Image (cartoon, rainbow, N blue to C red; front, side, top):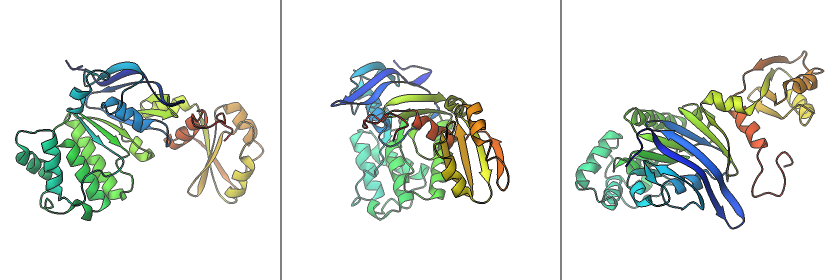
Amino acid sequence: MTNDRFAIDVEGITKTFGDKTVVNGLAMQVRRGEIYGFLGPNGSGKTTFLRLLCGLLKADAGSGTCLGFDILTESAAIKRRVGYMTQRFSLYDDLSIAENLRFVADIYELPEARKAVGETLRSLGLEGRGGQLAGELSGGWKQRLALAACLIHRPELLLLDEPTAGVDPKARRDFWEEIHRLAAEGLTVLVTTHYMDEAERCHRLAYIAYGTLLAKGTMNDVLASAGLTTWEVSGPELNELARILQGLPGIDQVTAFGSKIHISGRNESALDLALGPFRQAPQIWQKIPPGLEDAFIGLMQTANDNFSTEPAGNA
């Protein structure tokens, strides 16, 4: 029996490998028809969590449901209802687009596999390319084929693991337009990404660092949870100014953004005190709302790397 409200509803999910806890008591609720962004640095446990959800790995602790089925005991039912797009292209280079899709259709034992292949080719703009070898495709077209393979069995949930890595900006934009179209039709999407502009396209977000959930909610919720005050500075001699400001009490991060720098701190009074002697010409100073990248870096600084002996902030 499926849950009418949540496609994903889990809590306390934990996975260890040896003496390292890769996913640490993670809780997540994803509404049906929602695009949910899953952010975090490399090695933070995002891919492991996706594999736990769809039954490729089994959690050591925790409980919950995916599409209404128990993630610990009903993984077979979950797998048939999920489309999982991995980071790396995992189809066969020496098969054509249509042959790859037919292979996937046969794996799912679709009763009308030929018809399903044709419909999938048409829906994702691959019609006319069916005979082209997968190995001859550009990154953007490989991405589209991988998405087609994930959708051919009409899943209820789509798990996307950094799906746009290595593709050009137009292919990324086209991909996200397709994802929003699918979500509007009722498909639920959980997507990991490192691109802040992609995170802004999601309905809600979760930020994980080294196995631990640090923030979740709407973009505004995540920004508020970072607790940052941010100044934007433009003008001459920014490199020298950034060098001087790095590490001063009250300043948590100094980050270059094109021809400007962002200076952020969690204690507004301490930040203002630190910046007081510098906030003058020849630079132009402006207090701005922190962006997702500011929040991303700020949250990461508060987390302990579970593969490091150094505490957060000492790296």
